[in-house]
Picture 1 (cartoon, rainbow, N blue to C red):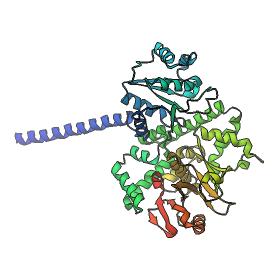
Picture 2 (cartoon, rainbow, N blue to C red):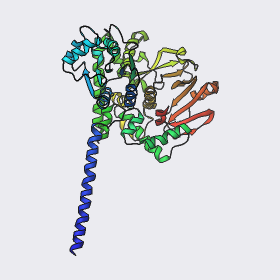
Picture 3 (tube, rainbow, N blue to C red):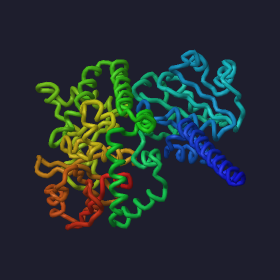
Picture 4 (cartoon, helix red, strand yellow):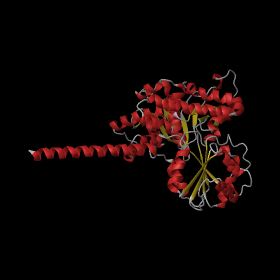
Length: 470
């Protein structure tokens, strides 16, 4: 009897120990995941590629505020260099004095070392100039620092081209540029714990043009609907993953929107009133049937020239994405663009929902993606294309046949229609374009809520989430 009791006690003890072990592992994993590697970003591979390149230039990482530039550069620097020196010209304005005299590299490094900024060890040090738009002389000095060759340099800023009006000489030929965006849908899948094997199956279905397993398709569409309302701003994604209360995510999104409005008020100069009008009007404009940005809706008799600089300000800062009209389906597209006719998309669909589509999140999460006639899903497709560095164009010739996106693949055109409703095979404009000349198009794509399928006229129907593979 005693042996039985001891055996039971021993078994129970093993269960308790194992349970504690598992709980500890989960807690350690949670802290580890939350702290350092919660959001895996593709930019890290781009940074490693830059580090390993021979005769490297300085790397300028551009992008809107709060897309994760500082975080990813900081993690990269600390992981890949013996010494990482970070200088933020907004938080440390006194450092600007290091660039007030001669701009030769030895003088600048000597000045920075006197300020106690770190160990400047040749060949083993990365110097990171953050918010470089706040120090025009530092941008000018990049040429001389790169020529010196002793250290590596990364620059970053949110308002480049806006806050650098006083740069006396840009470092042309000494600087490589890359744009960082919010998380794309594939990165969002990583954050949700979807592994490379599952994403690989999705990509295989995209490349081979075959349907995804229905269970997998439904699961990924559910996550895609989450992506529409959460977006890819890192702080919003982390809040969504950590909190059951979605209102906390919306608060973060509203905080980011407020910071963008503050930037407009602070930096847009004479364009601030016009830029704010345009920024606040984006959700309403995308809710319309044709989604083209109509200036007359903002101001009776408004001239395109009057708002041109305001529109440029929003797109240069990365807050909005410009999609220009082309009047002919001919390559090269830029020869047929009309820059006075355009659509303005938001950088991020989560911000779009929070900005002007109050209460829409619940419907989207439940599957009602046809809300607002597809403005949100079309914005999601635009953002995915932009993250692939695909210039955004739409086709519309006197309102007779509008196609959402037109882009080059090699020497031929490809066209995309985005359908949020249930009648995804009704696409008169796409049919009209195909009837004109099928041979000119590399691909004719319809993105919808439904699974992959090949239709008439060589049209391929892909799920909305497969925009990540275009």
